Image (cartoon, rainbow over all chains, first blue to last red; front, side):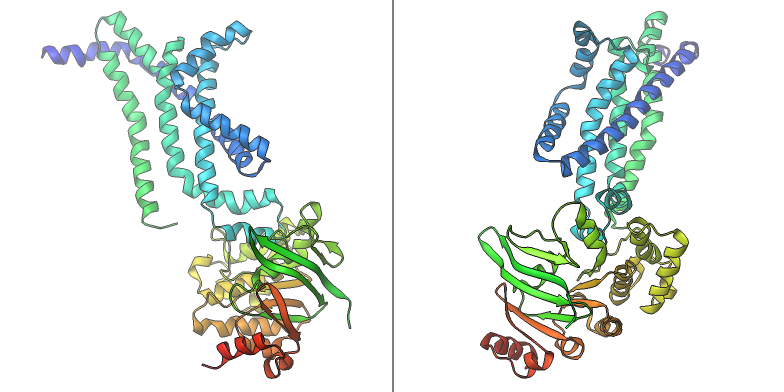
Length: 223
Length: 246
């Protein structure tokens, strides 16, 4: 009973719920913006990495390696606390989106590259032999096939980005986690934290199941 | 003799130390049906893949198609639009219907309207006997049907030349005939064809000229009866013995 009123205190939960919902909206806002920007940036980087000249390819590879190595929390703190020293001041929202996008684009670029490289050489040759320009080879022939391959890993990456939005609470962003810790302080009861955890699960568990389902379907060899 | 449509001079191709083509010189006339035969690894596929620059070749080599030099750059897509190719493994686009496969290049490269491209595609599919399957996906068709679609796809660009890279080698034996029949009909329409093949019967019956290659060089060229009935070179004789007498 004591345990229950400590962690699952219904009145405290009801009281903090509006605050948590506001936090959820902020979390989804940061997550969705970073996911979309990361997808666009990642596709762009992947195509550069595969088809640009050696100098650009080297730079893109360096970018991808650096942003896959750096801890997101470190990057976020640099963006928010260090960049103002050189005159770049970003709001908490844009700091979070910038850090998440930079990292997500690096991962997404590798996913797209693997997807494009998985398309048989004959597809490139057949479309080139028809006289299609590089642009149409990509948009009409290669990418529509690559998309099917990359949907499971891309969904995985979306899950990671959404989870990592919780780090934004360290730059004073009123996201779901931040709202929960504040509500906890206010009510002197950890129930809002449990509530936040449950909301994260409700948001992400279906996506995790969806990836598992897709991977099973793909491994059965249906295209 | 008609003017040559394709001119190849001193075509050299190497893979590291290995020399795949030793300075090939060849002219192919407008409307000619040329069959290229020879053992595996003789360079015959490499030769035709150089004509549309799917295979880059060494400096100093020269190929022109209808006067346009084949080299990387803005002219290359133009050359490729005039040079159709049919591959051993079909290489149809698996995410598009058969009809869409045939319509794609005329719309994107020739800037044809959807309606005109569809009409042309349906006519061509009719010609290769696939009109009933127009709305199916390639994976739903047999190998022979897929290869006939691939021929229709190449023809949709109304190319000056059609290159065939062992078009029947990946087919089950019972499907070889249907593809060769389509190719025979094509040969009768006056389109220029360069066919790399192991089908000696087809070469003998349809070719205007047969080229025998070995070790990255043209060993002998002549009319089908010159090559098949009276080969001059030892290597040609050995090859023909190996493939015909068993």
